Image: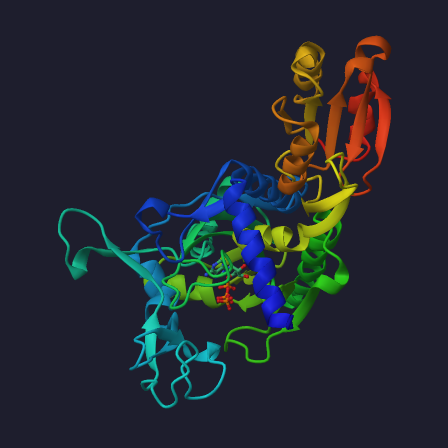
Amino acid sequence: MSDTTQARDVMNKLVSLCKRRGFIFQSSEVYGGINGFWDYGPYGVTLRRAVERLWWQFMVEDREDVVGLDSTVICHPEVWRASGHLDQFSDQMTDCRVCKRRFRLDQLEADGVCPHCGTRDSLTEPREFNLMMKTFVGPVFDEEHAAYLRAETCQPIFVDFHLVRIAARGKLPFGIAQVGKAFRNEINPRFFTFRSREFSQMEMEFFCHESEAMQWYEYWRDQRWRFYTELLGFSEDSLRIQHHEKLAHYAKAALDIEFSFPFGWGEIEGVHHRGTWDLSRHEEFSGKEMKFFDPVRNERYFPTVVETSCGLDRICLALLCRGYAEDYAATKKEGKDQELRVVLRLPAAVAPVQTAILPLSRKLAEPARQLHQRLRKTFRTEYDEGGSIGKRYRRQDEIGTPYCVTVDFQTLEDGAVTVRDRDAMTQDRISMDQVRSFLLEKVPPR
Ligand code: ATP
């Protein structure tokens, strides 16, 4: 199998697992779906929330110099004029005259050849295509009432800078973080959720004095690398840093953190030195003072901004891609001693189910349910008593449950249960009252 076919094969299997097990599926599927929009099912939502919570703890709650914000999706349209989005937030696109498909110019594989139907010289002259999604506010649908869904979560942070700073008694340097939906009318949504038209961003804008900005840029680059390698357990060789060659005129430095997806390297996060561009533009367009008087330096200035900006959906997709594996496990099925096992090796910190309680028989429901009640206070747990134990293990492997606890008839006599490790495939016999502390050594509390 060629690398591309293999990559496509892995992605197809992952997409199908995500649908079958209720992680992610197409939005409005009964109507044939809508391109670039995805719904998260029960396990997908839990995974997403766990990643978001980890980010929020790491970026806001564990620190004294970053506070949160939750702004609206629709802002005053001038926000997007000031930020440059209405004039410049566009991709170059081209249409194929033969198959009528539309492509982003920078995503063509060969010059002048349609990537879909392969026709030569069928592509139109490139045109600018603005990615902002437009709507109308109020009962009149004309240009005066036009508004836009935010294309990034950071602009409202700049607009609210002073209100948040005063409320949080923030002295510089300090940061404002926000998690929320962003919308882009992407020309070519693709690679599952990687390029969607509606997605969630987790962004943090750090405001500091210009003289310290490069130090903060390097600091945040290292922090964000730590987040992926230490908290989410990505191996160093599955990640890389790409420095931008072309910088915006106001920026001093910018880099992307990329993950090695089955379809190639793809950006999951950007760390950007944004200079004083955003605040100075909002001062110019709103007519309101956006500078800050620094009593320590006795100086009035526009703070310089260092930004960390990542896509929650892309991080979840990276976790799913990295976690997907097929191996062989022992089976009691007739005529076989091994069978293919599909397993999602999700880190325990973000696995939708951290531990599953599986009684071998319905007759063991009482002690098993009691254990479930106890463990669910600490971990994300699931109780499952239906079907053969083999089937139940397979299901838990496919949703990425790191530990299964089996209650059997012996439990009634010795008060012990079996804890099965998803990755090591070891089975430990542990006393019921020790299970919580045994798991706590391996699984962070929910
Ligand atoms: P790309 O070059 O892939 O279009 P970008 O450089 O435009 O991305 P940014 O504007 O820096 O992306 O957005 C920050 C983060 O938001 C990205 O690193 C990515 O994780 C996420 N993101 C951006 N566009 C999308 C999208 N269409 N679907 C899902 N996530 C996205």
